[in-house]
Image (cartoon, rainbow, N blue to C red; front, side, top):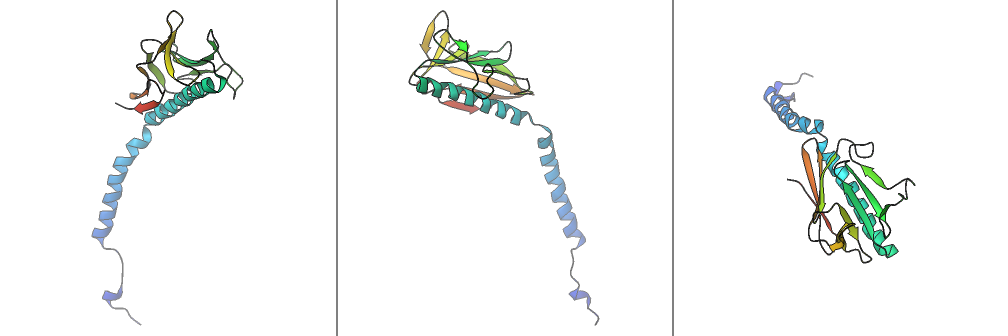
Length: 173
């Protein structure tokens, strides 16, 4: 039995070209974003910093003692500290000093560009989890402004620590 030309089904050249053009446009938009991972690196570093700050805050409440997070922009590190004269505590997971280094193996490709808590480099939490700025000369002062800036290949994230509650809010410029 012979089929007539009206019964043969298939795609026309115009339909195939439309699909190819749509795929080409999608590729042009998607592929450049796959090559840049700096936003993901900065976001991962921000989540690490946030979790360590929240750990210090929760530990302050649970232990009923002041806990500290001391940042050093010069060395791109921060330490979680405890005690009346702050000393680096032991990380419960690694059983090593609780120190994180930006740009190291734990947080590669990321730098700590600034960390200031009312002009000081140490964030502290009291027994009820309220945030304070701290230095050895002035002691604890209730936090009014606090932020941490993290950069990865030109992409910057800012973590802002809210006064009274210690809530952490992230933003990008």
